[in-house]
Length: 122
Image (tube, rainbow, N blue to C red; front, side, top):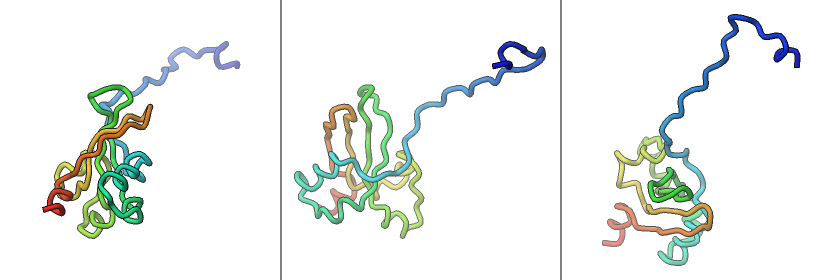
């Protein structure tokens, strides 16, 4: 209260940090809509699917759209690969099991197979 009434001269206001470009978010459990699509459409084992991790980033398609990548954290860990965000998998595309986009507003999802899925299907 008194800080606003008695301003000191020479007191600098904190400058806000410039907004950084949006980065991908840290790994998390896979989204329910993504997991459901993997189980129903791709007929994956539900016990395996819910152990997978997902990284995502804002998409250029729209405000509520997120691009995502699904990977197995155990496989990445055993190979000594630290997945911290979406771009971490750029150098290791063989770890990407599935990718696609997710509308976080209405939970619409489009799941596509990744490099590892295509190798498994062959």
